[in-house]
Length: 451
Image 1: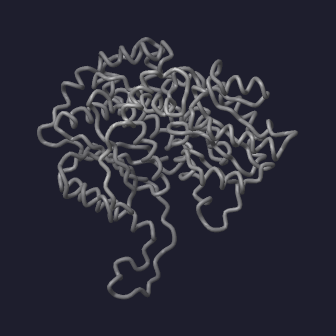
Image 2 (image 1 turned 90 degrees about the vertical axis):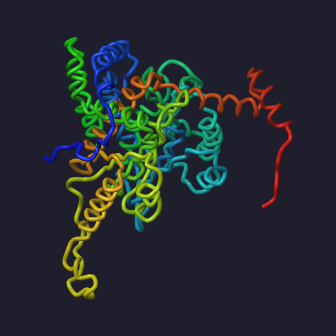
Image 3 (image 1 turned 30 degrees about the horizontal axis):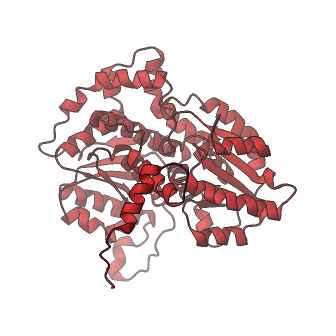
């Protein structure tokens, strides 16, 4: 089998200095060992995975007995599932798809809500509600209305169409599960939403889609294995961590930020993996955008964005670096006819896949030629195992980048402020300071013009 590889050939630009960050490998190894031992990084050690595999395997026949899965969640609760859906169930968006179908409700969207409730067959639908805290208002807003809809359609069996993924011990959804006797799977302690795709949060939708969800977990575990193995022997040291690609990516990003490269492009030349860009953007932005620091993630898809934002990447400000994702064994597809007009003779008889490969190579070379520091992530194939490897690599690199920056990569204080203000606007109890701020904001003089 072809291995997943990282090509560093075009990663470094003149003046970049990785040494100050590489020198901190020992410090970071100690911190990583301590936080894993304290249960603070479950996405890396995955202590929950064996039990989850057993529970989800037993539950899978029931999950697959439904034709539709309606996923209620937001942010990290759904971005991983969306990426997996687009990568491994692309047929749902194509003509002639005959099911199963997965629908992801990840916004406060009246039209989507009304469409789901008017068109989904309740008796063939499983509703998956995902909220670690159990009280995410956007998700719970959907939940209350979908629950009422199920009750009206299936008064005697509506609870059998519910699966709740939430905290194991506390929160409103955990209490709900106890009241209704609904099936549940737990989100482990200290597992934040953007790091949760390789838990029940992402694996339940993967199981419904019939994909190799255990391969997804195995791929992630394989990337973490050198670190976890060393920790199990109390032997994770600086040299061991320094050689891991997640730490190498973290040092690369810090050296780029120090040179003013404050934007990071995730450029996928695996078309079905385009939505991994959205998943990565949340992971990177919400983890690292703290205290005036960080770099802005940008999602791009080859070849589509060669004809749009790539102009900015190639000829705009020199403040961008690139993670360039390719597939070493991409499908080739049908061959072009041999009787094409002379002006297209260069593709006569060639497989359609050659076009994607050539476009990717051309874009990669153009980015390098115009001074964009670029790391190529060459995936072995399109398999779930390769996807799991990519996801764990990027999660670990994000954590290490945050620590090297001196910020906390697992909280999101600015996001929480917006949530509190929204609840204050709706009249939630408490939140006196937020309500005061709202009154001042809404009563101030507005500068409004027509257009």
